[in-house]
Amino acid sequence: MPYWLFLFSTIFGRRMNKNRITELFGVKYPIVQAGMIWCSGWELASAVSNAGGLGIIGSGSMYPEILDLHVSKCKKATDRPFAVNLPMLYPDIDKHIETILKHKVPIVFTSAGNPKTWTQHLKDNGVTVVHVVSSVKFALKSEAAGVDAVVAEGFEAGGHNGIDETTTFTLIPAVKKELKIPLIAAGGVGSGRGMLAAMALGADGVQIGSRFVASEESSAHPKFKEKVVELKDGGTKLTLKELTPVRMIKNEFYQKIEEAYARDASVEELRALLGRGRAKKGMFEGNMEEGELEIGQVSSIIDEIKPAAQIVRDIVNEYEEALTELSSTKFKFS
Ligand code: NDP
Ligand code: NDP
View 1 (tube, protein in one colour):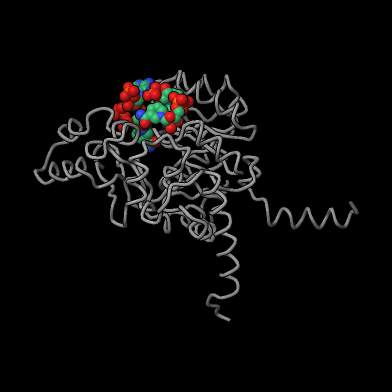
View 2 (cartoon, helix red, strand yellow):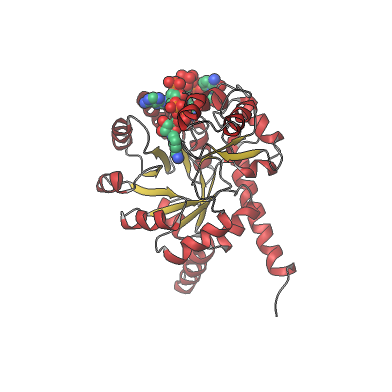
């Protein structure tokens, strides 16, 4: 290749097809599939990685030997990078760390805890570390703890969430203003247009959960996937702030929580009402009435269960389409 062509393609290639996130993870697209308990096992993670995004195994619902099995299967199913999400509340976290290091998992997304606890140990072992936060304060704490990137997740997101109800539209520019390391936006992103909006707000990439729950490869129960497809706007609510704030579908179990609030139930009563294994009952075993069904607001625009690779392709195409449309047809000040 002539030198001028090499220079041209390097400069423009870098500009158009690569950014800090694709380079950090070694992936084609800055699209991350969120680690989701009971929904993101090896089948989903490997499908997303094979499609050019970054797939994540959600280890919070996996006993240590199950995580070992899923990582082994994921390594066989893809030769591209993938990650494991490690919620720091997980009771046997040391065993999960051992599994991650044993299998040389290249990337770990930590969440729900202090990023100082494990970042250095993981990085000393060559792992790229990303931490999930819901505020500017914790984004900066994560940066100080030495993580390689931050996921900032807004109020729209499904499952466990920040207490302050800061929307993605507000959170991303606020974090962007302060943070030096790469920033991934999450919460309310489920399409190419959503991704473009997040990038316009300052994100280097997006993390998408709900859209991938309704994928063929997700390990969510088929009834839960159907429910996600049926949901309209207003179908979810962030609740149980006194325990761990969580966004879930307004089903019968949710109504019981509302009744408990109406009679001014104590934190202990709420904890007893939640009990153990509600998320598994709903999302994995398909009990749509009594289970805890964690999903984001963006479920209102999800209307089909698709293969994960198709979801990635659709996001990429819609992003490109919207970008062209914006530069040609939208309002301009001059
Ligand atoms: P997998 O490798 O997918 O599963 C192996 C083991 O992992 C099983 O013990 C299974 O649970 C468990 N598992 C699967 N996904 C998760 C998750 N996200 N979180 C925690 N544990 C998980 O191989 P299989 O051949 O067992 O399953 C193939 C597919 O069948 C699964 O990916 C899923 O889509 C579906 N499946 C559905 C189930 C359900 O709806 N109740 C149960 C199992 C599988 P377990 O020991 O409870 O079977
Ligand atoms: P529960 O306490 O209600 O139940 C624990 C569930 O996790 C059970 O369904 C159990 O499966 C499964 N499990 C997997 N590994 C273990 C283990 N080593 N010890 C005990 N249980 C285990 O928890 P939730 O369902 O509400 O939450 C599940 C996980 O999600 C938590 O363990 C935590 O890691 C994570 N989490 C993440 C948050 C975040 O990312 N922000 C916030 C809160 C929780 P089984 O029924 O087969 O025994």
